Length: 605
Image 1 (tube, one colour):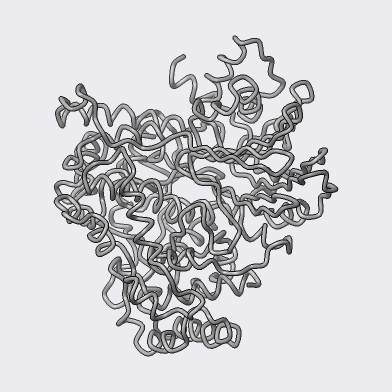
Image 2 (tube, one colour; image 1 turned 60 degrees about the horizontal axis):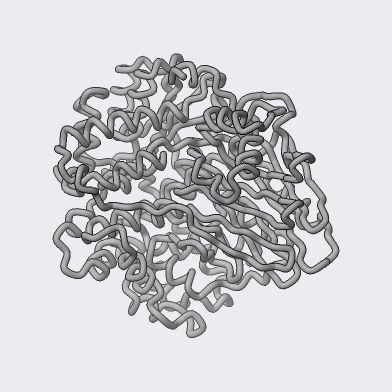
């Protein structure tokens, strides 16, 4: 099938949605109470349709955002009475048409045109291995009545979220952690391990942990089968391998560049839906610029691009319009420059934090939140450049890892917000204990598949840090405005190829070397050879004036003072001179503590 033909007629059923449910064990009576609460809480994830399903020991809920206005055939929970399967699904399977043909050849018939039914039939045909055939982003749950089990899965790079909480009586799950908390079933205690991760890894809490004790997230690239007696079996189905075989070991830089160009074009095309306007979040950096260039090459017409900018603070520029303008002109896009006055930041902060499934300290959360608000007025689908730095070695902490003799310690030195000693001093006694972060990094670094230190760092960043920071941020902030984001850099075939490219081709020449060289045939050099930019929200880096007043209101509240998590003396120290306490990755330690407290307050913790 011609690739262009595939693009222009792509009809994917439901993209950005919210799923939830409760499974009841050992003949415990089934009810829909929790499901109704969770479904109501996730209205932003899917405002177009909602429904629930009530089975013998499972209750399922779904909220739908129609990306292409198909008939109601793809509404969920999706039931196939003949196969005895019921599905709730959040995401998009990009290769569903090819899989559908394969399944039709096996004798399956289809009643709808979307990807939802393909997942159901694929599970029936191939069992748990069906996930290995999917190219896309997904979190789904199948209630298998005939085999009396429930099967859950999450995509390889964790683009779509799935949280759960298990008791002896039941297991509840949802696309959002606050939705689970709203049910009233959870004690809302803070996890000791998760707090250590949060304060060390700039708010990243790796799966399966969450900040709330007992609430778990299904790790990326993992399936989970739950039986009626409450037995749970988790299985990973994919891992990222950085080792090359003999033939790959012979490839030249030019060979790798050619393979990369082909794989990246395929990744962008897979995420192209021509029936609705597709937008691109255009920061002015190489990653989003390259997506615009390849979409233009793929023949996408009337491409809408969106850039955001804040005013400058203390000589630090708050926008990158100079570069995004070059790209918009070069490819004649329908370009929207969104200027955000810092006055909008604080009034939007409560809603932004309420949209977070877990607290996220990155300054650009509020940037993405305000950007998504504007973008959603124009389009329902955007492509975004998340993942390029982790996949192609763009960050400044990779070069020091190239010839490291002590990978765990060196990674902690360049990456972690504070040492374990500092952590132990600033938390109350109940939260003191092991150095969970170093232990976690050591365990990840020792896994097979990445031999040299820089590959170990690239692997932990692309499979852990990326999932629970930039990817989660984009999912949470776009879905707050019922906007769906697609991330071509996280196409798993592209990620597998990039892992095998020798690290010097990625980390060399200031980072993302091979990606930049590949991009030269697509986008103007002045965007490629510019200094690296970030998504700056200067007001949150230098906390002054009304921002400092806001922070004080949160941290001086009675709730915070009586919480007994972070010591009050430490909070006073941060408040005394915010600019003196900046993390190695240039984040504010004061903002980190504020955001944690504010998120807990917003979620009734």
